[in-house]
Length: 251
Image (tube, rainbow, N blue to C red; front, side):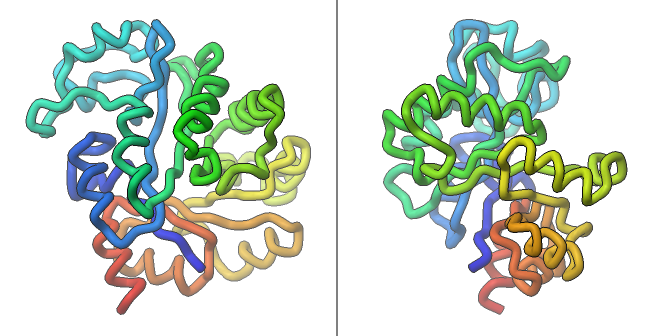
């Protein structure tokens, strides 16, 4: 079955990664909500796409440079006065629902890791009993490796997760080629890959399938793209228009 993930809570429907978007997504017939996590200076895990708050709020600067209280002084544009939500608040919205989490681990503006963030994410998922309902993703294999190590330190493993997915950009495909990507996945012990929707075809699905790798999609934002994801049988895909994906599923 192909799962629908509301990307950032439905970016083309509501302000991305907000409580408004998440509350509305929780009412939809989707399987997953996709969102991104960063860490404040005082080690709070917050949900925001960019490492900087410039694009989506009335403030400027890197999340890593704000304390949580300082960050809460800034309002998300178009949200009706909302601040950036925490991971815990996001879990509170979806925990009682049937919608699972597709969490993307982000990095600082310079691409460096947040110190200890993967362990804190793991602890919040464990404390809320959401670990088994979470698909952990990243464009960085080293961040996935760090999350796996955090689970190992807690006597758990990535098999406890709903999914453990490397997000692979077309640029990475161009640099490494499919064989290079397969080799990298093998080195890091990752068996799920997410590719941009318009780069997935039957041959790609077959290639990864023969190598024991499950294919997911991202950026399937139109009805046509959503229909292609269902036709190809990807494991899951993200979309900025979950309404169109739902219609494609039932159409």
